[in-house]
Image 1 (cartoon, one colour):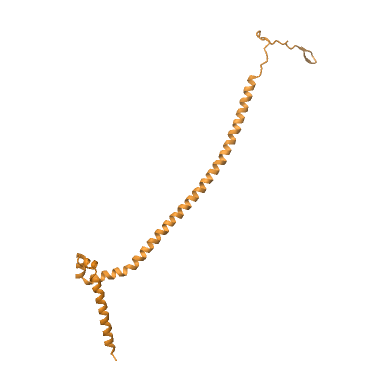
Image 2: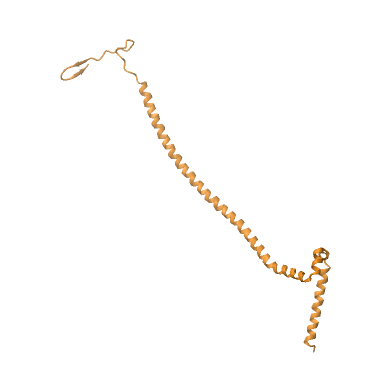
Length: 166
């Protein structure tokens, strides 16, 4: 039987081999090689504690940044929908207000037309009456020598009891 220490040691060696193979794969990647040759790569290679802190910070900040971006995207979508809905409500309210104003103008125009029609009929009747009264034949003047239609003057006989007109 193998002791627990040897079984644990064998598992650790196997885990170490897997980690080393992953590290070789990462270190052989062309983008990692380009980054490690850059000044930032050299700086982080010389300071492993800072590199580990940066790696932990990036890993831990992924969840809050992801939640923040999700909230921002949700807010943007909600704001767009809200603006569309709000704009629809404003257009509907303004349309109803315009309809009410136009209905009021129709009623007002009927009233003004009625008043103007009554005024026109009244003024027209008055002017027609005045015009026809001017065109009626005037009674002839008996003292006028130029008068062609001479009718005998009306004689009046006045008595005490009654007035007779011939």
